[in-house]
Image 1 (spheres, rainbow, N blue to C red):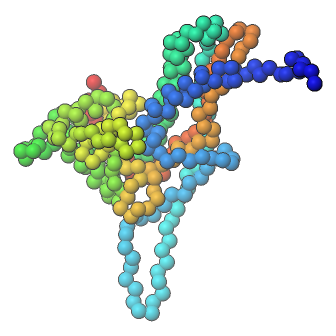
Image 2 (cartoon, rainbow, N blue to C red):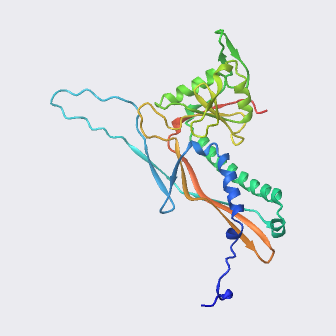
Image 3 (cartoon, helix red, strand yellow):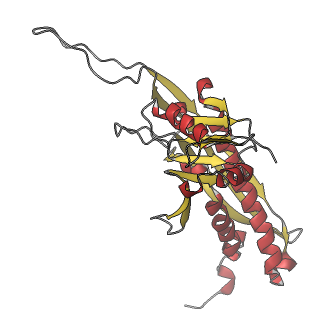
Length: 298
């Protein structure tokens, strides 16, 4: 059998020729997601919407006393429903083919890093918007800046959050039998937290997953992001509760995972990395969130 070269179709898709461009975007985006990891991942396999069932009744515990021979009372928990439809986010970069051919790696990497950072920022911003909108009216209060020092005296610093504020936030979350485990804030508020007189409560712990230091304030993990508006601190429970019930803070619904491709615009000789995804975050337990407001913005 003779070998006929023209019988072989040449694959000219950009993703096949430049797979490393797509890989850089994925690698750069994923480590930057701070708020997104507070949500439980959920994949939408069929349809364009997903409905979650949420308890809409009392969270009180205990059962009623029943006289001998009396029928058992029926426990009925009213439910409400929340429906969410993932939406599409998409962006692209155009890189001249000559730049790729000439191996201008710093230029290419910078453009791809910018695209990855923009994507990560948008995902984080969507998560923060949903979190802030789900806070019950009684779970938001202005910070007092008050802290009881090791000497027993009360220390106050205006426009900051003191330990009394964090303890108040924890009490509001505990009222629903949830355990506060995370603090999210702007870098400005992180600075002020590290300046608390109870400095011994601020320490590093090693994450058993990443083996990297976790910044802690007491028993709470301290996370910071520029997506969180300056002047606001969020205190959260990711769903840990005293009754060991499955009650996550919320879900990050994914219809299309972070997908990349590289298109070749032959008429312009342009290499065009494209990124797209379809997702939607949803909070199902707003009582897991408390906001401390009125803090410093610079």
